[in-house]
Image (cartoon, rainbow, N blue to C red; front, side, top):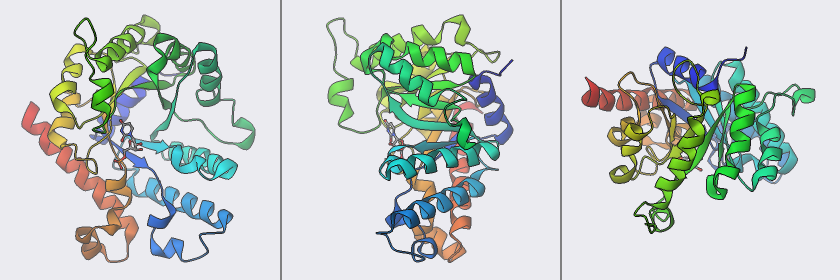
Length: 313
Ligand SMILES: O=c1ccn([C@@H]2O[C@H](COP(=O)(O)O)[C@@H](O)[C@H]2O)c(=O)[nH]1
């Protein structure tokens, strides 16, 4: 029988002793000079090849240090069909490096449309003929309520995969909408978290670890609201964006972890993959941008571990 995603994630996080998910959001103009300079940015085939090559190198550089990688499909969709193929090829590369792979696709709609999206992203069959593998989990947008979550949960449960419902965004303008207080005194995002937790708690979605294959995306940038969710929903895996580039502090992000270190994947994208732009890495490793990326992942792990130890040890 296929293992639940939530159980595989527990094993990976424990094996790597890290809650870090590296985000792969490649922008051509920020790729290392030695990749960019080999062709023209107006040659789409070259650009896609460059993005693919960079993605493969990032995966190799961080694979032994982190349990998971998150690819945001927006950075690939912009290149049309070839971009989508590149996305799935990188998912496959990351799977080959034994990483748990999250497709940050944020799909959502009314029920029967969600089922079509779920078939696209949570089935082993979709890209089989191209020899490509699907992600282990995807992000979804729960704005349509339970009907927009259940079809994804169903498919994820059947196929040993996971979904992370985008419950509270990490950007500051999200507060006006998502922290709006409803007539019963709850904030909008709290209601969405409750709806998600009701679905997540169905026994068919719970793995041996006690976690659910239905998790939540909650930004690490508004700790005054969001860290209470850890206590309230013990069977939830949190995917926590906002660490690093968006100002989320390690000490706030690691509050989404349980004392055994599981329960949260803390994402950093730009802060890791463009580390070679930073003086401290450039001066240490000169032109070796792969080393800069690897060191940034090692450093992020250390910062997270130190903060975790302060809270739990
Ligand atoms: O609320 C959200 C939901 C998703 N994201 C995504 O996470 C990464 C963050 O990238 P950084 O470079 O580490 O800031 C990116 O793919 C976002 O689209 C988020 O930031 N906040």
